[in-house]
Image (spheres, rainbow, N blue to C red):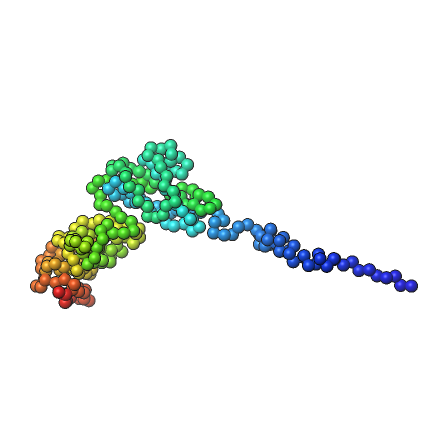
Length: 264
């Protein structure tokens, strides 16, 4: 007589629940890949680099290189060296600017006083260590600097790319008057700097970069011409064209001469 064999089988409801149990287990363990958060804010960012502090009249503009994974930046300053994000409050003129971006303008400073700055990067995990310290001394005789926009609204002006990578912005009008004022734009920092004045106000004039790296500025409201020297940031009158011109063209030719044509 044969004995009846019994097989051990898992209850059907356990078999149905196995995929869910496995999924929950893998999720709790990081899907078997070592676990942990691998999102953009999984670690504290590193300290910002290339920190600069450019002085102006009663102000300093701070700039730095953006840090991967950072959501905001903090600037710590004092009129004593050795400032950090830990001790700034105990130092002379110590203060913190939080949740800022580069470039950052600090106004209301005392001319002739040297200020010291460090920058940190921050995200949801925490704050980085402080950057290298930089210092700057605002002075009354320094030209004003403007991050992100020109100091003066203009139309009818010229914008000439210089050999040093900066952009020379000259003249135009502000809606009421012709302008002689000049600004320099630095694309490396995004800052516009007041750079003096042309010899006369000009509107709808022409500016041409010459082979010697100087800029020829012609016409606008008369027949006069002047040269801008980027080495000295000065303008020099060099005479007149035979004809008064504005809205004309001035093109540098291969032989180094400039062809001035048309206009009104």
